[in-house]
Length: 131
Image (cartoon, rainbow, N blue to C red):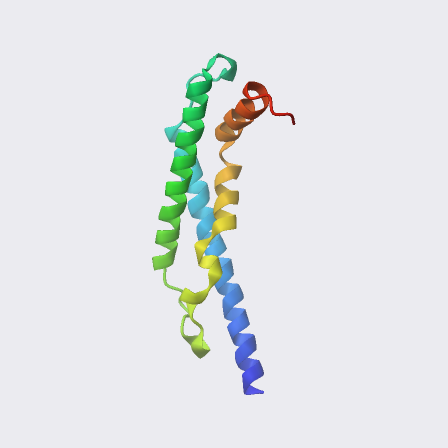
């Protein structure tokens, strides 16, 4: 019976830990996306008049900033202690979700409208890859 109780507590702690990690990454991801948008705010709204090389450079720079932001977010979240770590042997550092891949991608890409527009324009209009 003690083993069953221990298992239930560990699973509950893990669910709580995953939930907190998701919240951290969502907040940091949205913040990073808004900062990147501000940094790369394109003055020229007309993509048709922008050279293909410039569009490619914008996409590459945006991708680089997203990857750097994701790296920094992981480093920040890794140092945030889980307040219930150690209860019944629970080890926060062993949780796979601490890397935050899916929620980082979701939260950043949702707010990267300029990035999506430029990428779609490049793929569909400039490179003529069908929809």
